[in-house]
Image (tube, rainbow, N blue to C red):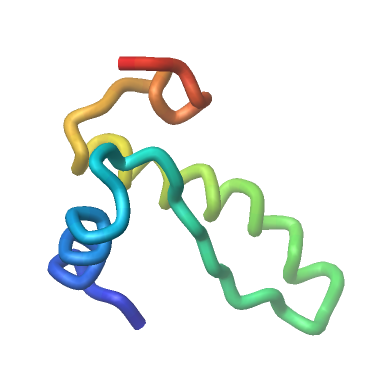
Length: 64
């Protein structure tokens, strides 16, 4: 699992701007367990945008 410092290091090396975010989630085998995946992904992306000092518009793919 990558920590915040690892992500920052990769971002500085690979991209001049934080243009792409890869998000990996564990997908449960039980189909009923997948109901919360979209909400979990949205929460993680919102957290990443917030930590980067962005806005909701950034989360949707808009320019800063």
